[in-house]
Amino acid sequence: MQELELKYGCNPNQKPSKIFMKNGKDLPITVLNGKPGYINLLDAFNGWQLVKELKEATGLPAATSFKHVSPAGAAVGLPLNEVEAKIYWVEDQGELSALACAYARARGADRMSSFGDFISLSDVCDVDTAKLVKREVSDGIIAPGYEPEALEILKAKKNGNYAVIQIDKDYVPEPVETKDVFGVTFEQGRNNYKIDKSLLTNIVTENKDIPESAAIDLVISLIVLKYTQSNSVCYAKGGQAIGIGAGQQSRIHCTRLAGSKADNWFLRQSPQVLGLQFLDTIKRPDRDNAIDLYIGEDYMDVLSEGAWQKIFKVKPEVFTAEAKRAWLDKNTDVALGSDAFFPFGDNIERAHRSGVKYVAQPGGSVRDDNVIDTCNKYNMAMCFTGMRLFHH
Image 1 (cartoon, rainbow, N blue to C red):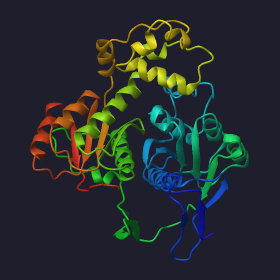
Image 2 (cartoon, helix red, strand yellow):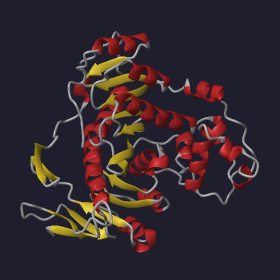
Image 3 (cartoon, rainbow, N blue to C red):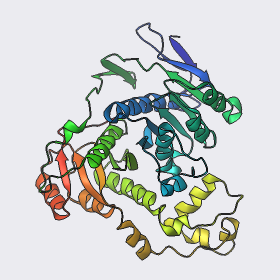
Image 4 (tube, one colour):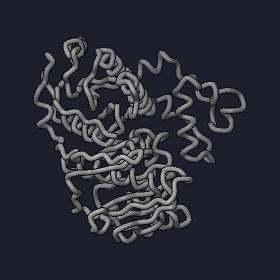
């Protein structure tokens, strides 16, 4: 198949719409179920590249949860501990496959942003992963293959309309890519730059120690950034992105946005949140919304009389700012990647508040010395990669 007609483009008024191959070759995908849309396919192709590179860099199965052409979460398939299984709502699933663990992490890091996601998997989708996908609100999935039972589970989703795409894992795109904007054709070489631990050798801080686990997290953050709308930064820990700030005009806003998401990820693991007793009738998305309000500044929206009784069995105690700060201070050894240089030390100051100890960024700012000094102030290890990762 050389082209695929779509219902419409980014918006319903943008017709006609299709994807096709200019070189006369067949498309590298097969639609096994449903009808993916324009934005679905943008998410699918970006997500597939991301997980393919994560798998190549780490040797582990990888998954990502995409929304509006940026990842909401991405992870490799490390086992889940008891707390992680609970905050990702998979504690009832027993022992999961590595691929399912990767998706649980990718989906669970920022569940608010992942609502209605498009999923990309590096490996053949197995039954464990399909069962997790089945009960989440999602638009579709792309993978290099599907186990027969897993495919049937996915095809039944959304009343049979769930988009299921199989991609040719051996497909290699042309080295030059083009796109049209305002009737003008843009052309550039594809970003084929390989991201691995060799990028982390130029350590510019007094602290030169980047252990293996931190190196993996930094590589994950950089690969995530390669497919995130710029400006962007990514906090990572334990084999997954825990906070992604995408598409902001200033770097400090990226760092704040991603840091707040990383904070929420860690606050979900606090005894106060783990101890919340939800009514049995409350669905997972509603739990996520309630938790987001409870740990945020709008906590009274769920603790006011009449409101909490519709959500919780027992009225929770107020999660004070002091208690939240005390818990967040326990989050340590977080890795932070940036797609371009940090222009000021304020980014490092904000990153420190979210437990960052390891930093990877291109370097090259006129204020590099200020940024390095701020890292030294907190005994962080920072490397200059020399490689910008803008993505638009």
